[in-house]
Image (tube, rainbow, N blue to C red; front, top):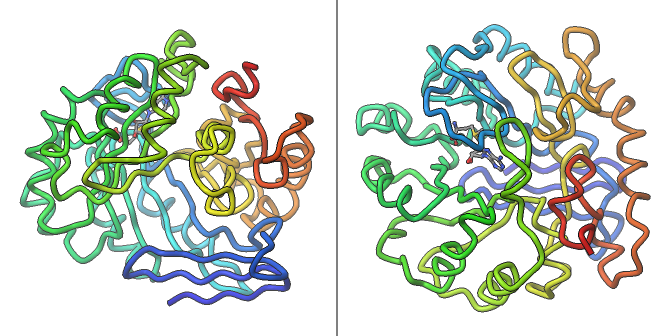
Length: 339
Ligand SMILES: C[S@@+](CC[C@H](N)C(=O)[O-])C[C@H]1O[C@@H](n2cnc3c(N)ncnc32)[C@H](O)[C@@H]1O
């Protein structure tokens, strides 16, 4: 169990279950930010052969790869000299399983006592690789963008050998009706042995065009209604970008919701060792680890970003205290902004 008390910031994290607790001055209060990030989202390459038409990273088969040495530098920079290292990393890319040294990257992470999760398109997930990964991974996420995709991925899910598997499902104009059916329990046979479906808000970035972003309307309302009483056989979860819609839709108790964590509790580091609040910053609020120390970036350079986001939303809304407002990078993906 990782236990961290730093001033008014308190954090407990259990590596076994992945459950984390965070509180501020009192149990009812949220701390303004984490002096040591809780999670780092690390892109170990921009190499991927799948060629998804909507890829926000615009990944290609020859994309840049972060070396193991660079990865170790990243992990070591994340270790605070005063408070120790971060709780977990989420490895992405590019396709992590196309990284030539992926297994070394896993071992370097485990060696440092950091929980490792990764996201994959599932195409290279075999029984053999899963046997090598067993016992070293917090959870693995397999990405799908339709039910047809989920059907194709069943073989990969069956390879997982008891590891915790989540499905990352992109919520776009194309996929939202199937997502509603999934929450309504229509595909429970395809979801067997899945821990959770995590819905990712579609972003119009990289190869992703604006036309597929979610919009207010009956499809989004039907999805939000389904979420209020889910019938799926596994848990459901959401990326931070969907939180304003959950709060507005009165979907769950507000105190159960975590607003956007990027730059406050989590951080993104790309394959060039650039640090930014999240993977969608598109070059804004980026600082290179080759130029600055991590904790200079986290504690000082990100301060103006945090001030901007906290004071950003001027809407008169019951969720104002909890929600950090619309996405600072792609405001059009937040339904309140559209309003
Ligand atoms: C860029 S991929 C990299 C990891 C791995 N190759 C995979 O497919 O999971 C990371 C995640 O971003 C999602 N993604 C890709 N393009 C997106 C977009 N335009 N909007 C939202 N999510 C997107 C993918 O579905 C995947 O879950």
